[in-house]
Length: 452
Image (cartoon, rainbow, N blue to C red; front, side, top):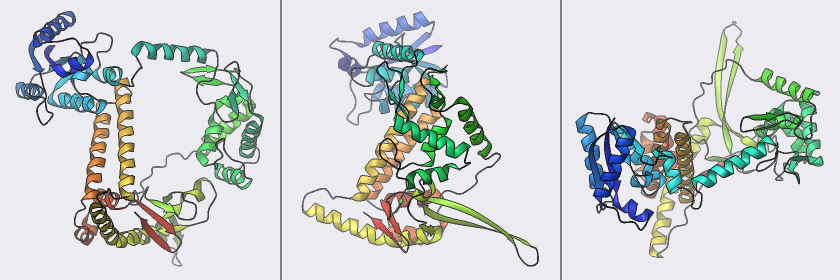
């Protein structure tokens, strides 16, 4: 394959005290091409970044690739020559691929640039050899049926490393299986039963549908250990008889909806609305009602509203609901005043020479951190081959959007103008506007309040 070479002198300097020159890199590049049967075409080397932190030779290489119309392999010494952190590497990697070329590291053991980035730029003190030893050690423990990490509810890690039963928790597991199989109680009713009796989770919290479902589906309770694709029956003491576990599994499968395709539209205030009575989120709920009138004609109507999530998932709190249109209207009516209040706060903080304590700013900081975590996860998945590069590209786009929206929240657009054409906006435009101006909505039965 036709190959181009690229390196950054500052990447060499940061990696070691060794002095490298363009001649040294060209020699390494030629050896790489000769070893891998590539046709060397041209080398690009940046000695320093520009004032705008762009690398002129890198830009020249991109232009060369785009104008040539040919397929190239861009060979780099390692991932640090694309950027000094994982985000920079991902952006340059996608940039080169978008120009029509592939990227490879000259590192024989780790040629993939995304995998290489985790080794070269990853967590300080974690080497490739050490990571391999840890993985092998974990696999050896798994072969012996020994617990890795936090044990499942009902068990603890015993002195010999295998699962040991925790009697109090095991009794709750047995209760859950008995209610589900013998008394034919649904998961939501089981959650309600546990919470009403004051039975808490290991961390002292309330039960929910997900935690109950995970227990019913986990083969660990019939004594079977599963990890790294291994399945070891009778590796530890069982809490549930295999027959009862299989019966519960079959019931879960029977009750799973089949052939149902959800076409419900998303909710504008999703993730922003909280119940003022219990502090939990309120979720969008869609209900369909069908009936016949006196003439025999069939009628159908769809109701959309926000409902306290605790009521649905934990069977606690009350039946607190708001119709979708009513709640969204109440929120929109308060946004102009909220924006003015934040502007006054900013001016006051400026006069006192301090940063404003904005609840919205804190929310956006958290949203950016979440976007960064999703980017890191996408980077790992793409590097491992579990996801395609477009998944990584979307994660970066979402990160950029989160940062841009956070900046807009500091310098808001004309709110009145946006609200005046509200009905003409697309869903994403409305959602973006709300995310920019609304930190949190606390809802009571007859009142909705914007916080921050």
